[in-house]
Length: 277
Length: 253
Image (tube, rainbow over all chains, first blue to last red; front, side, top):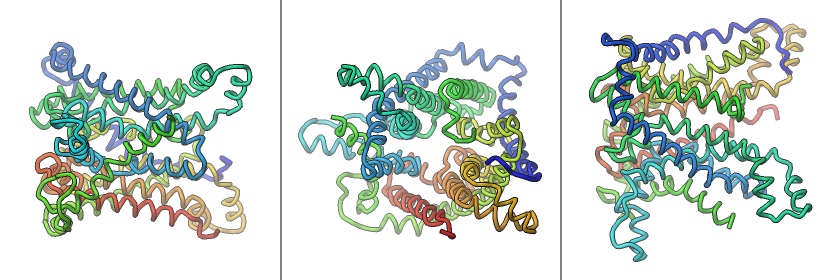
């Protein structure tokens, strides 16, 4: 199969040179910039560590990413199970529901959520029309809005790894557990869930990692005073022109992202989703 | 219970996208649900207001150029990767997916810093270069995936029957990897057409793309023209996907 004759390995060169000059170099330069300050190499990192507002933003970013991950696991697991066990027709319907948002422009989806969640939006109008609430719920421009929007964006990244593991699982293992006397609940918690855990872990690492650096959803659906790490980076570039601090924050995010990705790849086979191995 | 959960999650996935469609046909200056009246005025605004029209044109130019560049470079890279030794191929493979893993906010800031010194901020070449890099992984991944299924002895056969290397490439290799190339090209086009974060940093005031125009529309004036633009983008995504499904079919079969 991997039986290509002749030369031609040089064909990778144009793309490699392009990436080296216009991707690796700019990112490397950004990292270098975080250490290039007359006052000392570590001043910006020291500031991140010492200013409570920055630590609060880092902390909030971690918490929101973790919450998004948990919400995605809870929502994705049953859907992935149905995706794997459904009839071809049912599978097609679910796949369309998963892939439509996947292929829809991020801004279109954010805008859709604003239409759904704003005080005069679909959900509030419906709830007030039904007489369930007297005044609109605050569903957007706060943490609630960020969690609702982020979880929806991230769901496909959770569903697909879990479904991949479920599809590989031999259904006979749960039959065996049942025939040996396990209740359905026991069979699920003792056999099925542990065996599908690698998919959950791969999806979780992926969702958590992407969430850490997410910019669009927090900027559009979040509150202006509850910003996350990516917005803090943007703020330092465009508003206060503090490139050194923005570079240091970017470096922290970069190390966290690459570290988590490496862990996910090493232990949960995350790299397989790209199919390049 | 399981079915209920599945339906609820499916609705959660598609509802916000579908909610935009009725809003885009509303007759009011603001977003209200259920929409009042029916009109095409927001579509008219989209096609007649220079800001929106120019943004759409810029996006088409940038996405087309980025898709062509990424497809050519990515396809060549995938062909080269398959001829490399295991270890080198693995290392370079990691390099090729790096633009997908590095958070876009970091890529955006890094491009902004470097491109501004090269005079590539606020113009089409800068956007094309940035989007080519972002789209490259999708082409390499798609072409590599298809290449693994091809029996490469057909190329040897063509060569032994007297084809020059170039002939063998055009007549045998390229048709064999065509589905991957087309998938990569579609991914690349949509990646560029939908990209917002990098464009926010490097598009400036002179080369505004459609997502950047939508961004300011969403942030500063929540008018239904954004809904009309969103519907047109949805249509385009559907069109590109259909095009891909139609083209990927092997002409021989």
